[in-house]
Length: 463
Image (cartoon, one colour):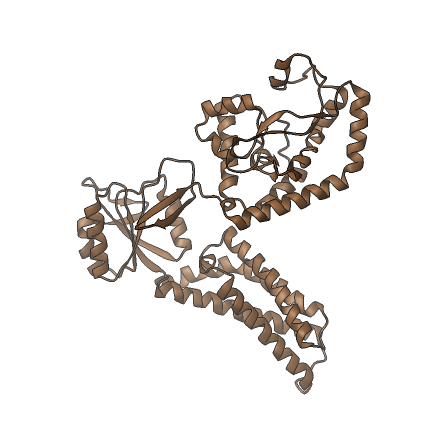
């Protein structure tokens, strides 16, 4: 982070501390309408509380929050605010109890935190927008270098740069046939004109697109930037993959890029998801146990055969497991019958089966699979083995779904891609949504998918 970014961050932090103390003062005055400054005991406790709140927020900023969140008005900042809120509430209440602070209603300790967090979240993007408009000179002047930029990717890249405090001045092309401008950015010339561009313009950072540039030219460019004291960022050539998550790690003296990095690759996230799965599945099975008994009785009365249907499915790392479902079809002696996809008005479906399938009640026994660790509540839907083989032939990156456990519901399902998989678009859309979930997993996303599964309108029967 350069000095300009630090100055912007200081302004954002100063705003937060002012906002926090204004909210605290209003809340205290509202709860103590008869307060006067002669009430020394109350005033002393009020000052102590103000100090506790401010120190707590400083600790949160220093040790919990990441400075990048301040320049990212999207989901990362929201997650940071919510995480901070829980820590804030717990720490303040603990200190208040230990210090035996009195004269204030208990709600006074919590309500200001929620009000402050909400106002901070809502006002952040407007404050950052104001700083860009009124103090654009405080943002880092940036120069793009190379020919690895094109209209298909430079728009999202430059928008993201703006959010992170960079002000793009223009760029240097390493092509002989150079356009006059790209995305309305000035062309300063070729890469060989870097020294002149840095000498005539106040540039803080340069971004070098390594695609299409030779190693010697890249090293020469870095050397020139170093001679002017300009920071350098390298943009490697991205492989042609449907993945946006790359993580660089150092092994020995070499940089290694880990492709398709998922939050679930981290041990902490894996434990958190497994703990949530187990508790949620256990709660659902206990809560719906009377419904399970009723459905089991109706299935036995409706047709001969077992209560559960346990087809083989492929799970994490392509491991085969038995997937529990309530039986919705009549028992057939033909082994090929179980491999056939369900069709409209399928004669194999029983009367109770139609009802169960309409409300997806036949999927409820899969919570047993979740308890056994074979499935997750949220994840890519487990496909039949023959359907998986069909997908592998038509969608190259299909097997990336097996990085994580399959789920009872998933991101593809709540976005309407749970129907037939006949066309290439249907197959690709389902897989692409599954891969997006894998690469963007978070506890908040799981909760959102559960909500959309129950209350959403994208409900279709697929299997």
